[in-house]
Image (cartoon, rainbow, N blue to C red; front, side, top):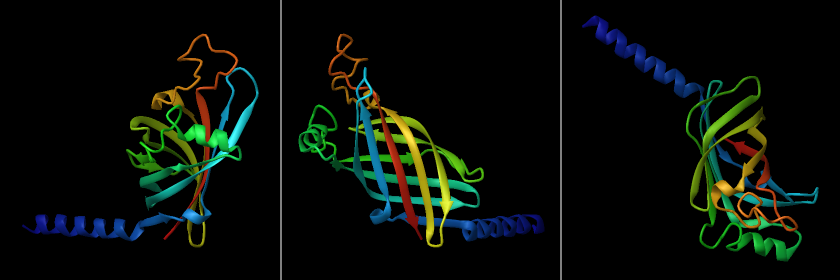
Length: 190
């Protein structure tokens, strides 16, 4: 009986310590930035724009990211060229009226090595969900932390096929590369 009591006390103590070392942060939407870069498939021509995070949370226990969840406002896709911006929002690309949000959530806890981690999670765009492993850096601040990444995504995995050279094999002149870059500086506060 004493052994059982000792085990229960040890478990409760361990859970208590983990709660003390666990920190939960919320997205600081105002100070976070997301930029996308798309390019032509057969030339160096590229375009850059922005998109806005809608909400997010991250939990860190000791030196481990125990969970991360981000929601992106797809209706916020922006570019200085209004025609391009509207085209990106229509059915050729992201269909933002039908799919107003994209999301990323971690599947597993992630070890932080120095300031680096690789987030193993699922990304959902246009209702299609795929696994992604996103390398990130983390920086502790007085009020929370900053997570940064620069990651290449294959848009065709998410049914964004417009002018794709891998889908439309004969396309050359107006082909758009299958990959686009998503670059983020995401600020979290307690």
